[in-house]
Image (tube, rainbow, N blue to C red; front, top):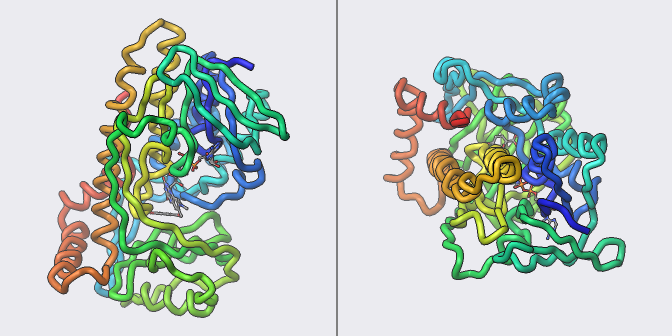
Length: 392
Ligand code: RFL
Ligand code: PHB
C-alpha cells in the first residue's frame, strides 16, 4: 500500500486532519489502535472555542454540533462562597464557546469518513515508523493478524500523549518541557439535567470543583483529588456530599443530583515537545503537548495544529511550496505556549494544594478577586478562554 500522508491516531487531531486533507485533494490513510466503539464513546473534553467551531463548520462537519451544541456566553468563578460571572461575549467583542462533547465531534468525523470512503483502519497493532529522516518514510503494523506496510510521503503523529510517534524520534532531536501537578481530577457523568446555564469553576478550601454539562439531560462534574486516588473509596453518596460542600455559596445554588453513570481520574500535566517535527514526521495534538484541563484547551489545540498542518501540506502538494511545512512547528508552538501559560495560570489559581503556605493561598484568592473585578483582568481571562483568533 502507498499513500501521501499516513496518519496515526483517530482522535480529534487525526480524524480532522484526514478530513481537511481530503477537502484539499491530498490522500491519506488513518491507523487507529483502538476499536471504533471505543473511540466513539471515550468521554473527554467538552468545551469548543469559537475558532474550533468555525473550523468544523467551514469543513462541513458542524451540522449536528449546530443543532445539539450548547452555546455559552459566560462562565462563573465561585470563591469565598460567592459566584462571579465572567461575561465572555461582552469582553471579547462577541465571541462565545460551545459545549459539545469530544466523543460527539469524533462520531461526526467518523461518520463523514465513512460517507466519503476515507481509508480508516481500527484495531491495528505493532505500529512502527521507519526512515523518517528520508524522503521515503514507511509505517509497519499488524491488522487482523497480518503484517502490513504502507509507504508514504509524510507521517502525521496524531496518536496522543502515550502514542508511538513522538517516541520514534531520537531523544537528542527533541527538547521536552514538563510539569506534573500534585493533584488530579475525579470526573463523573450524571443523569441529571444541568441546573445552571454556564460552567462553574469553584475554588474551595476543600479543593477545586467544576460543574459542566454534556447535554440538556447530562451533567459533567469534577472534583480535585489525589493523583493516586482510589476510586473504590468514592461512593456516589460521598461524591455528591463533597461536590455540595465545595459548591456551597450564598445564593443556595447546588448541582442537581442524578445517577452517576461514569467515574474516572484524570491526571494533570503540562508538557511540550520542541520541535513538533522530525524529518517527514509531524506531531499534532496531545502527541506534542498536554495542558491540564482547567483551561479547556486540549482538544482546541489539536484542532489548531491540524488546521496549520493541512494548509501546509496542501501548499506543498498544490503549489510546491515548502515554507509552510518548514514553519509548522514554530507556527503551532506560538499558540501552544499561550495555551500552556493560560492553563497553568487557571490551574494554579483555582486549586488549593497541601503544598501551599497560607501566604500562597491568600495570593490565589487575591488573584480570583482581581480577575472578577478588574475589567482588564477579566478581559485577559475571557480572551484566552474563548481562544485567540486564527491569523489566516
Ligand atoms: P487523542 O484524543 O488522545 O487521540 C489519539 C488517538 O491515537 C490512538 N493511538 C494509536 N493509534 C495507533 N497506533 C498507536 N500506537 C496509537 N497510540 C495511540 C489513540 O487510541 C487515540 O484514539 O489525541 P488528540 O487527537 O491529539 O486529541 C487531544 C484531545 O483528546 C485532548 O487534548 C482533550 O481531550 C483534552 N481535554 C480537553 N480539551 C479541551 O479542549 N477542552 C476540554 O474541556 C477538555 N477537557 C480533556 C478534558 C481531557 C480529559 N482527559 C481524560 C485526558 C477533560 C478530560 C477529563
Ligand atoms: C468538561 O466539560 O469536560 C470540561 C469543561 C471545562 C474544563 C474541563 C473539562 O475546563
